Image 1: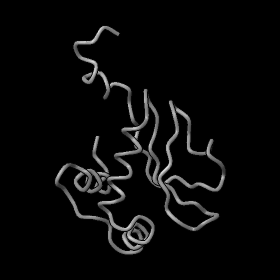
Image 2 (image 1 turned 120 degrees about the vertical axis):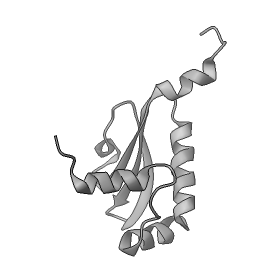
Image 3 (image 1 turned 180 degrees about the vertical axis):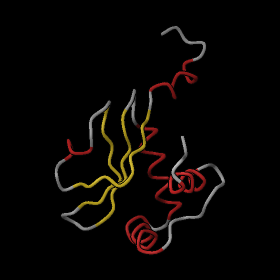
Image 4 (image 1 turned 120 degrees about the horizontal axis):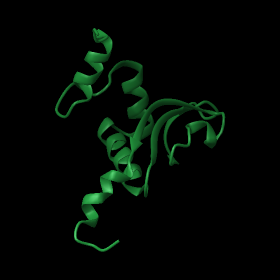
Length: 108
């Protein structure tokens, strides 16, 4: 099976230490709506850490307000459960497995 070159390029950019912050219209929108790419990353990380169990952190376009927003949904709920005005741009799956190491040594 041959990998799609576009997907390979995306994976190179999202790996730790790889790629550059978005440029062009996406970079402008991130700066406009979050202040900077770093602030967007901080917000996504904070929203993901606040989810208990499993869920999703979404970078989406709010069609009504014409801006990028970060939303969360629990379990396997899709973004559409937040309403039709949100268009998903990027979804990050947050698994409850990430919390298991925090419970090491505790009787649950």
